[in-house]
Structures are given as C-alpha cells and as structure tokens.
Image (cartoon, rainbow, N blue to C red; front, top):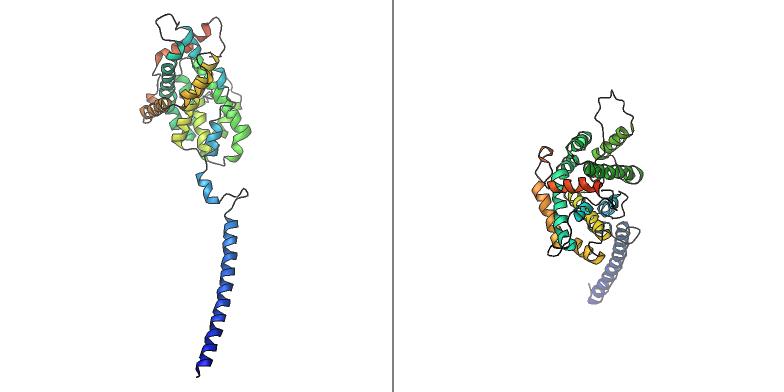
Length: 295
C-alpha cells in the first residue's frame, strides 16, 4: 500500500468522524433543550427551585388582613391601661407595654398551646379538645374572643381554604366539626356541645394545609403578638414605626421561643392560666365606662 493511498484513507476517515461528531453534537443540543423546557414552569423558574420558595399557606395565614376579627380584641390591654394610671414617677404605658406583651404571650401559651399541639397531632380529637378547652376557659371575655376567632377561621376554611387542602385526616376532621357545629342540638342530645375555639381549629387547619407543627405554633403566637401590638397602636400607646420595630426585634422572637419551649412537652391536663392577672384585666374590661375594643 503506497503512502498516498494511506494518506487519502486517513483523510476520509477524519471526514467521516467529523461528520458523526457534528451529528452527535446536534443531537445532544436537541436533548438538552428538551430537558430544560421540561423542567421550566410557565414563569421560567425551574421546578427544583420551587423547593426554595416560601411556604405559601404559611404566608397566607400570617397575613394581618386575614378575616378573623382579631382587630376587635385587645387581649386585656385596654383594661390593663385603664387600671394602670401613668402618674409622675411611674413608667409610661409605652415603657410598660413590652412587659405586658410578654405576659400576654405566656398566658396564651400556657392556656392554649397544649391544645394546639394535640389537635395538630391528633385531629380526630378535635371535638373533645374543643369541649375541654371550653370547660377550662374560666374568663368569659377570653372565651368569647377565642370562640369568635375560631368560628371565623372555620368559616374562612370552608369558603376559601379547603379546596386546595386535599383529603388529609385534618381536613376530614374540620369537615366533620363544621357539620356538627351547624347541626341543631336538642336539650336531650347527649353529644358534646361544640364552641369552636380558636387554637384547636387553627391546629387542624394548618395541618391540613401542610404547615409544620413548629411553624404552626410559632405563627399562632406571632399573630397574637401582632394583634396586641396593633391594639397598642390604636390605643395610642405607641406609633406605627415603634410597633414595627418591636415586632421585628429579637426580644419578641425570644419571648415566643421561650413560650414554646416552656409548654412544648405539656399535655392538655397541664394547661392552665400562667398569668392570673391577665384574666382579671380581661374580665374587668366590660366594666370600663368607655372602651374601643370588644375585649
């Protein structure tokens, strides 16, 4: 075989290889484009990036505009202010408020957080937990506020939230609870009388919407803090900027975390009012000559 023939053969082989390489590159580019398009959502975000997006139901339930009627209640703040005159030498209402907010969080955590935790873990006990919480809520003003917000959340669940929640045990428990609430009860009926307290219904709703237990408990307490701070702004205790600074502070985060840690392992049999004075302030609210809140 002559050198010229060998050289031509090599050139032909190189040409064939280059043709095959070009075809393989074109095929690879087509496959890559198809994979990218399959992993893109309509807004251009990759499907894997959705895992890094905020929890949508959590953002929804943390909205201050959620129609639960929380703005109508001061959680004892208005009565507290009326019973603590700011005379010379005494701290002002603005200076006293962080202490009151801490007491309000402790009170809520000790009285209702155990019910929230059990209702989240065992939504089938929703009716029993509601009845037990109703029996253990001694202050009628606090009871009225809890029932009003619980029923508002139950209505919100039925009209706006349940369609996207699926068929989880918590969703079924809420459906059964709602039907039982609407059913007429006779005097001879031995069924448990339902009230619709806020904490157990909140727990079942957040469980049905896929919110974690820690997030559910934290946002429950944080929403209460927001409601009390909002009441303080409307009662002229502080301005809106100072209020937002308090909500954003590490002090509030620490108070919420401490309240959760102190009550996380408690059962409903250990739940009880941890700040007795708060029941007294709330109970005396109806005796005020003039007031701007329902409680």
